[in-house]
Amino acid sequence: MNFDVDSHALWVYAHILLFVYWLGADVGLFAVMAFVKDARSSFETRATLIRMAFYIDLFPRVSFALILPVGLHLARNLGLYPVDTAMLVAVWIISMAWAAGHIAIVAWARRPFTRRLLQINKFYEAGAGAVFIGLGTWSLATGEPIAADWFAVKLLLFGSIFWVVLGIDTVFQPFTTILRMGPTGSTPAAERRITQMTNGTMVWAVVLYLLIAVVAFLGAVKPSW
Image 1 (spheres, rainbow, N blue to C red):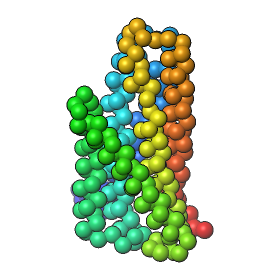
Image 2: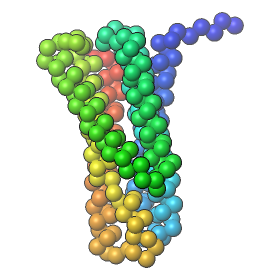
Image 3: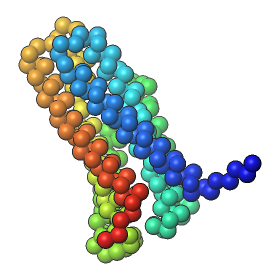
Image 4: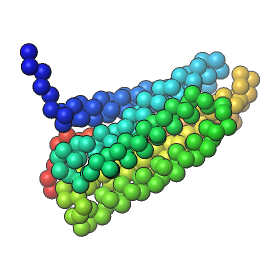
C-alpha cells in the first residue's frame, strides 16, 4: 500500500484540528458560564465548575497560539505571503512560548509570577492584534504585501480576534469573584454583579465565535471580490 500525503495536506489537517479544539472548547466554556452564574447552585458545585473551566480554557488558548504558525505554513505554500524560514522559526518559538505561558498560568495559578505572565499575555494580545489589523488594512488599501483581498480581510479579522480575547481577559472576573466569596459570602448584590459580569463576558464570547466562523469561511471559500 502506497501511503503518500503531501505536507500541505497535513498542514491543512492541523489547521482544521486547531479550529475544532478552539471553537469546540470555547462553546463548552460558554455553557459552564451559564451554569456558574446560577445562584441556586451550591458553592461547591460552582467552585468545581470553575476549576474545570480553567482547564477547559487551555484548549482554545493553546489552539489559538498554535494556529498562527500553522497558518503561516499554509500561506507560504499558497503563495499568499512572502514567508521565509527565519520568520517561520521565529513565529513557532513565539507561539510555543505563548502556549507554554497559558499552561504555566493554570498549572501554577497561585504563584506570584503568574500575575506577571497575565500582564505579558495582555500586552502580547494587544500588540499582535494591532499588527494583524494594520497589515490587513494596509494590504486592502494598497494591495501590498498581500494581493488577495480575502486574505487581507482574514488577517484583519484575525487581528480583531486578539482584541476580543483581550476584552474577555479584561472583563472575565465572575469566576474569581465567586471563589473569593467563599461558601458563605453570597449576597443578592454580589450575585447581581456576577450575573452582570458573566453576561458581559458571554457577549464578548459570541463576538469571538462569529469572528472565528467568518475567518474559517474566508480560508475555506477564498472568495474573490
